[in-house]
Length: 358
Image 1 (tube, helix red, strand yellow):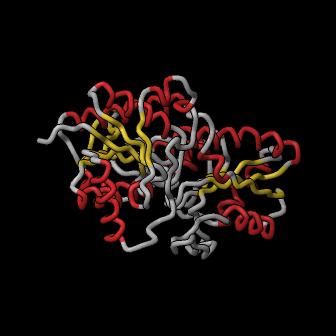
Image 2: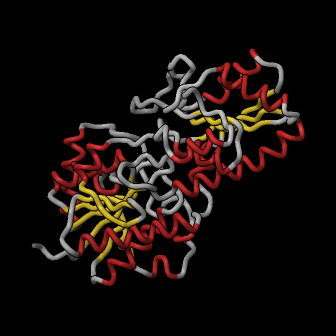
Image 3: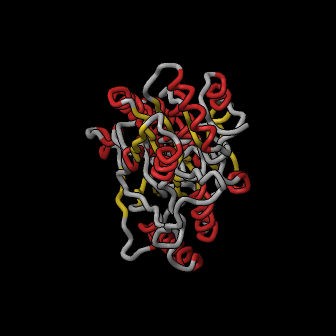
């Protein structure tokens, strides 16, 4: 087995809080083995574009700086989809790996990154360990992905703030949160933020169900309400609210908050509604204690796996324990949506929150 001397680390996909804590953990752990760590800039672009874009990372990059405590990515990230022939990109990727002499690459990314970059690494003949991160928490086989907890806190803080203005103006305020096609972020924030209604992509809803809940609140004497809706929620008939796509033709979620606001106002006069679309604020903010800790634990575990000769695996938190799964298992499992029978969904039902039709 070839002895590891140089490893690369890159952050791929949408950014989130905790990425810099991962980089810190990997650099410090790898240094204990005498490895050189190459930080690849802007995801896979750092290896596929010419000239190559990277920097050698040492403990000094983080020992006297606030970076491990900050959100965003010190290295930059990439979230634009595949713009060229994947085989051409894979070839450039392999050439970049060879030019730098990398023996392994640590990829901090979500389910899409685990799939795409693992294929590049196989073609390049380089070892890879994945580290799960995403505010959507939809990466399979891990209970939590880095960044999710901080995003939940941002959404919960927003609900706390919205409550005060909702109460002042006797309104039903709608908070649209991210999450792609998974409702993890919405339901966790709704439960923690004591919302009255939470709509997620995995559970169908009806306009009448929403109106019934609002009327119940009004009849109780309360004159304000909080509604959380995940960006991936469709219309009552299952149609997308928007047909917008990004620069590579991938669909863009969003707009469900405004859609519901107009629908409620047109069919129910008990409350005026207003919409807050939280947007990229959810990707920022100082990482919570949980995300910092998870980042350090998973980052150091990834280095340990490499030191023992393992490859093509993703580190994870499962059953409350740190473990790892083969990338084949991860890819086969696919994106993990919200379980309609999860403890958070059950709790929402139990406290009277409307989350759709059972």
